[in-house]
Length: 179
Image (tube, rainbow, N blue to C red; front, side, top):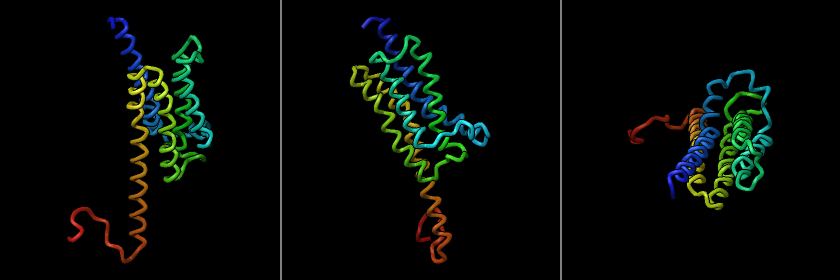
C-alpha cells in the first residue's frame, strides 16, 4: 500500500469515526446544554417517526456512497442531513417536549436504536472497508452507554421510591448491609 492510499484510508476512517461520534455524543451533548429551550418543541417529532427516520438517513449516508445513491457532493450533503436527523432522534430523549419519553421509554428507544444504527457499519465491513466500519461502531458506543446510564438511573430511582413507600424497608445506604 502506497502513502497516498494509506492517507486516503486514514482520512476515511477518521471521517466515519467523527460521523458516528457526532451522532452519538456531540449532538445529544449540545442538546442537553440547551434542553430547556422552547426551540425543541418546534422541531419535535414523535419517537416512532424520529427513530426510523434516523435509521434510514444513517443507512443512506453510510451505505449510499458504497452503492452510488449519494450525489457527487457526498459528505457535504449527507453530513448535515444526518446531523439534522440526529437532532430529531435525540429530542424525545434529551429535551422536555410533548414527545418526551418516559424513563423506561428512553431506555427502550435507545437500546432498540443502537443495533439498528450499527447495521450500516456492518454493511461497510462486509463491503471490504473493515477499518471504517469498526471506527463507526466504536464511535457510536456513547449511544449504548447513554442507554445503560439512563437504565441504571431509572432503576435506582424506582428502588428508592419503592423503599420510601415501604415503611418496613431498610434505608438505602452504601457500605456493609450488616452495619
